[in-house]
Figure (tube, rainbow, N blue to C red):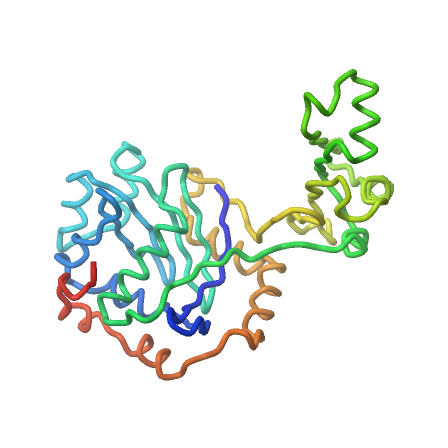
Length: 314
């Protein structure tokens, strides 16, 4: 299962002004609230959606319409391990994702049918409406990962490499002639270069890059992506020279029993993520509104207990 990392921020609807915020306390206070009636009323289409606390800043994000799950969540003695066990016994009871919230960022890992980023955005915006913060929209933005040709060649270890070319590229033309097809039949070719087990193709990679991108980085090339790292003990990262890629990690779910610990380890050891967060926090295109931040920081579970469902604007 893939963990995709996102920046999150608020965009003022009228002005377009974009604000960096830390919503960890705001979210956690909602989850700790005893306002079960309010939590049961938040729906996406016909499904109930719940955010359940597993550990500090780490949550199970659940989409369900099954009474067996809802009744368990309604109980005063909710044990999240009971929810995990129910879902493992019968995955049709609900669809799950896992979320880690940090300052201005989150990591979201979804099972195949689990709630994705659009539902998370919907959920957080709904919470904002409940507390009267109607003038902002909540934005999730995947962290783009892209490198230049020269940066790609500086990596110490290169793994699997994939590129896609269209009929204008010389590789397409050469293979079309060799294999006997035409651009009237075929729109593009995707070529996968798969190294032998534990083999570093760094030196071959420079030739591949030169030959595929020698006519200009965008001419006839739809995609160029490769896996790379600098140190043998690091995890290979997927990087794009051409095309769109995002910062991510993998976890082995459901085999990972201590999924929070795995999340924590991945976040703390993803160097690209740490660099992106530093860049984002320094980015002057995003402002900090201290008054708004103070509002989020001082919200409490008791504050949520006093809010009714009707406060939200449909």
